[in-house]
Length: 119
Image 1 (tube, one colour):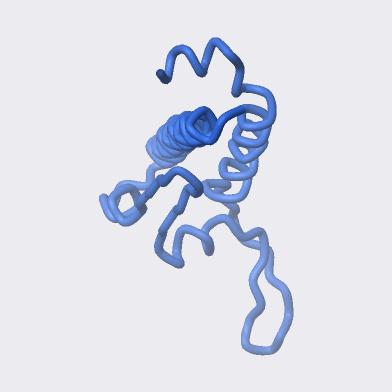
Image 2: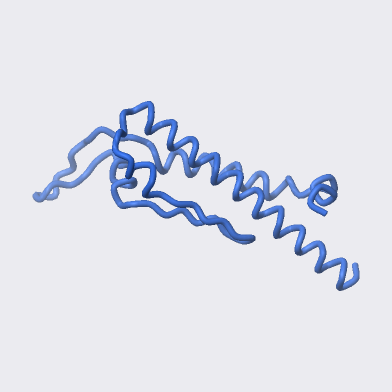
């Protein structure tokens, strides 16, 4: 493979990765919004105070601390005792479920047909 062909292949791989990450970011967002809507998260900051940024190498998800807190099963009180609370799986379950999709797509999805489509 010549240097020019290698550079073209690297550009196509970057486009493919960015497309996969963008698609999964949209899917994660929709899954979280669907869960929050069906479980009466009525305040708009539950949906608006999250963000997804995709590049050719990364998917970055930003959120408020309360998004992680509501996902927790237990918390510790001031005495150090664990207390169970109502858990709303809007982070771990959704993120890790889509993480597996990302890994699978990146490992097996870069085919000749995809190269032709991206060209």
